[in-house]
Amino acid sequence: MSELIEGTILVVTDHTGDDEHGYVLTEASKRLLTATREIAGGDIVALALNSAPDVAALAAQGVTRIIAARLGRFSPRVPGIVADCVVAAARECDPEAILNVSNARGHDVAGQVAVLLGTGASVDVSSLRITQSRLLASKSVLDGQWETEFHVSGGVPVIALRTAGLVAADAPEPTTPEVEHLSVSFREASKAVAVKSSRTEDHTVSLTDAPVVVCGGRGTQGDFTLVNQLAERLGGAVGATRVATEEGWIDRAAQVGQSGVAIAPNLYIGLGISGDIHHVSGIRGAQTIVAVCDDAEAAIFELADFGVVGDINVVIPQALSALDGQ
Image (cartoon, rainbow, N blue to C red; front, side):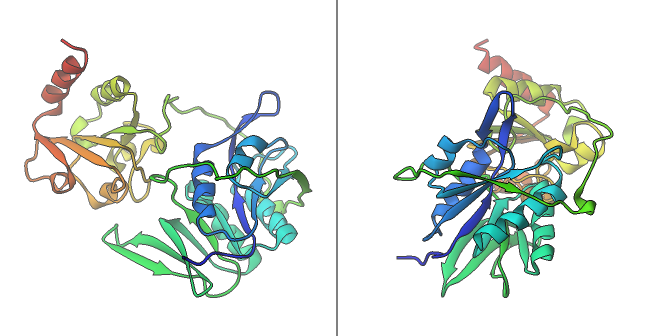
């Protein structure tokens, strides 16, 4: 039987919603809590960044204690605010490990918490295990060419875990946690005031949660019409390479790869993508990879389960017609 952490694990959770309509635990947080149970032999404490957390969902995930931070007028999207909440919660529950989701905010939070607690942090971690009472973390390095395993040598490890590719599952027995409200003293450096708000394109399916992802690259030449149409037909999400986002063809939030998000859909379709290692490192978790590119020597074909050498402007309209039964 594998070893477990017998002490407390503090898990930073995220919710969608608001005070008026209520809050719902995110799928990424459910996957994070599912992964936490695999290494937990003691209490799992969930930190909620709102006043009315999704108790039913947290109980279904086996959480034994819920700490709801009082943010007041501050936003849970601000890393410094979240870091202050994590540190305050850690002082309340004395954890042996702190886990959060590996995303842009999660990276920042992990680093700030580690500095404030005088310990170490790691982000983009792919898996965790316990050996000789030490928490070992694994992650890809050197553009995904190597997998390394390591541990934080001193203090409480702060880990940002990649949840793409993980499957959320309820605990065998639900718990009955109570909500404890926590007042937090925020550092001046953490406080932020919104001076501008903008809304990006509203995709119906989350990029990291989607079972199907259609990505566009340089081969689209800036026209994502076919990418969007194919994703819509398949009920999937739209992603892009770094080049596509840097050229301004699509929002930066759609970037998949080393400096974007990692995905693990059932089906990945790359359109006009050559297979640069920066992009490929973010799609290795996909179950099936399909590539359409007019360059027969493109590196993406080495990774693809199915490949089509051809112009996407010819191939994809035919695929759309077939999907429409024409």
